[in-house]
Amino acid sequence: MNVLVTGGGGFLGSHIARQLLGRGHRVRILCRHHHPICNDAVIEWLAGDITRPADVERALAGQDAVVHTAARPGIWGPRRWFYDVNVTGTRNVLEACVRRSIPLVYTSSPSVVFDGRPHHRADETLPYPRRFLCAYSATKAQAEREVLSAARRGKLRAVAIRPHLIWGPGDTQLTPRLIQRARSGRLVRVGDGTNEVSVTYVENAAYLHVLAVERLARDATCSGNAYFVNDPHPVRLWQWVDTLLELAGLPPIRRCIPARLAYVLGATCELTYRLTGRTSEPPITRFLALQLSQTHTYSIERARRDFAYEPPIDVEEGLRRTAPELAALAGRP
Image 1 (cartoon, rainbow, N blue to C red):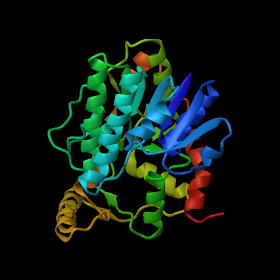
Image 2 (cartoon, one colour):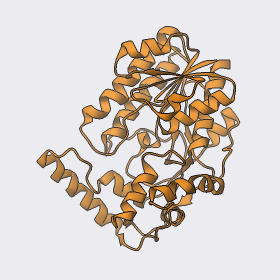
Image 3 (cartoon, helix red, strand yellow):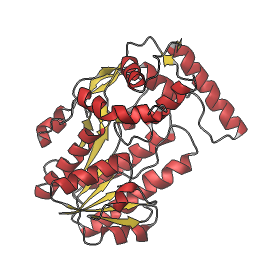
Image 4 (cartoon, one colour):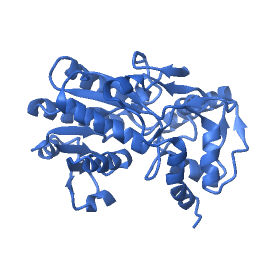
């Protein structure tokens, strides 16, 4: 198949592109900037922006399927920043797929169902909340709803994949920020340290996307569904963070703050930043305080049932593969 990967130069997108190649597919990536994967002679790179319909139409020409990973991440900023990319951009991709009858795999997030409460082995019956604590979650939820609604109405074949806390080599979000905060002495444990979370090694997340592409090409029985994806066994969040720090050659976290106090500080920071018009990310927000202090674990049984999905890389192997990059982020040779 010819498969387009939007955001194919990014962390998850580049792993999806390489796995598609490894399974014999031809890959085109659409991204705004040049990335190292763009130098791969067997990958076709198109420079473009999903917020421009003409760029999307050009990218979809001759394709048999689309994996839409391009998004604006983050927990702070004006809603329009996230809306333009996460909603308008996704609509452009969705509408182009409908016109061309091309299957679509949409990269979503468990944050689309985050309601401010702990989640214990939650499955896809978890409803969307009435309100969201950050614009990223709100806009990703809106986009997911539109994609799945179109699929359920028979306009196209499409699924939504919800990876939780993606990590591994090439990470540009989670581990670099952890290491940076640890090196500057600003990394503080939130809560009592007993909360468990589902994490997703990047190659495992990519693998489910590839399986979904191939399944949608064969039949529509899974179309219209959302799927959580993560490593099978949750981790104690703060023990896992300490393990990452150890691999980076950094000391474990010594300081902590109660969860309730972190939430109050997050609300105060949000109010202050809004009143002063600051667009930089606050040191803590309500969303971040809850994510760092609560248990959030998700079931992958639906993915196992519909795609025969089993994560190929376990946590220990993932840590081994990621260790050199953690050391480099910490400034070690």
